[in-house]
Image 1 (cartoon, rainbow, N blue to C red):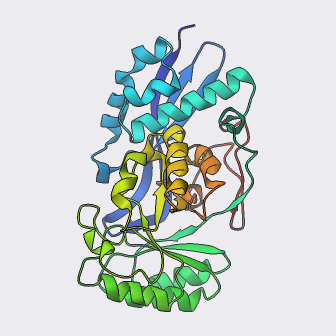
Image 2 (cartoon, rainbow, N blue to C red):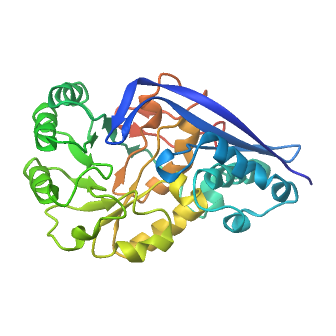
Image 3 (cartoon, rainbow, N blue to C red):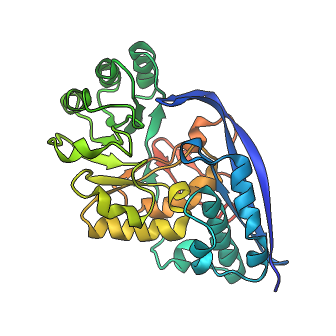
Length: 327
């Protein structure tokens, strides 16, 4: 049976904007891949990311380049040979999972041989700003169990303290987005340890993170920009204690599950994260998050609007997807 692959671009405004060490965004531009076999339709969402030299146009071109292969029945297991890891492969991979689930009448977790997923505590992200603005944002979010704090600028120690003072009971993840350097690394880690931070994410640039192997870690250090697929793990040993698995980096759920297995085998802590996207992008990641010590799937909470139906969020919990959304 011939399958049809189509793409679409959706734009979701970000509530109040979103700032990290690399700049500010006011909306999330996502690409949706849809695959139909004439009876059933599966879909998946990806978020093109400039840090990885991706644009909406380049991702759509990548997806459309394999339309013929998909029409001819390209198996999901062969997708990695047709597209490199990244956003484009993620959208197609997740669409194939969803299509298979709909065609077989089974849920995606069953197809993956996984137990039924349960709600997970997700982080809620605070944008980079002044200590005062971040302290106020932390106060408003202090009822949440887990906060992810964007840093990466001069005066990060003051930002950490402002957040902790205003959210004394929340667990904290610090994400520097490659914004620290060899000169301030130790001092910033010490400030994080003093403030009871649970995890530091990607403090140094991915191509200049060697110092992480040379200094003590007062708390776990997590690789994000340095970790895309299971092939990257060997280079992380000795520098990182944890790995942030994002489907837009791995190229979909298929490789994300492989990376999770490999990370566990290497004795590394698992975090499951996301780009800012809709519930459709988060739904497959919830399956990987079942085995994660840290879950950061708050993308829809940062948007003005979401898919309908979307994922259910209640307090700090994100619930697994209904079949009407994905999988």
